[in-house]
Image (cartoon, rainbow, N blue to C red; front, side, top):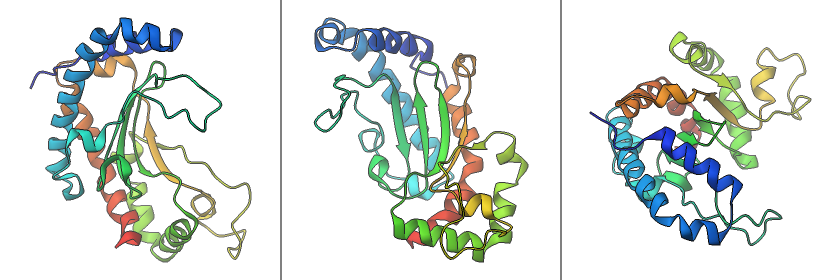
Length: 221
């Protein structure tokens, strides 16, 4: 099915927004923004439907549940720029408010991302994730070493410099037990989206993440 949105046009607009991040400029270009945002949200709706075909946690989500608004919350931020310079969305149980392992897509000039995992879990959840990985190490390694995953994704998780308390320094899974979050990413270039069926392409490239989500989300059950 032909995509409704033009990712290169979206990125061009976002570059302009990044250089002119103020309310006066945005108001003058609001029609341009709407003309790009609406078809992009329609495509995100299609992406939700395609992912829901293989992941029940995405089933029933609406576009508004998943996509982030362009407006920044600047109340407690030193950066007072009123607008985000990216379009993004989370696909997982609870949408953008989820704490579970989920899919994430991010469209930003120079920083295109397709990824998945658990972002910045709370302390008790992180402890449970580490315990799960230790207890079910064989299953975990089978999932993360699958060629469908390793050929697309790399770990880009914030990590401790030393092993967490109560874990031996020579643990065979030290690399993973030191992680403070569990995120796998791929960074496609703009040409990846320069096709009529980029939504289908993204849906298929997100599919290999599902076994990891199923594994990590065990701690939430």
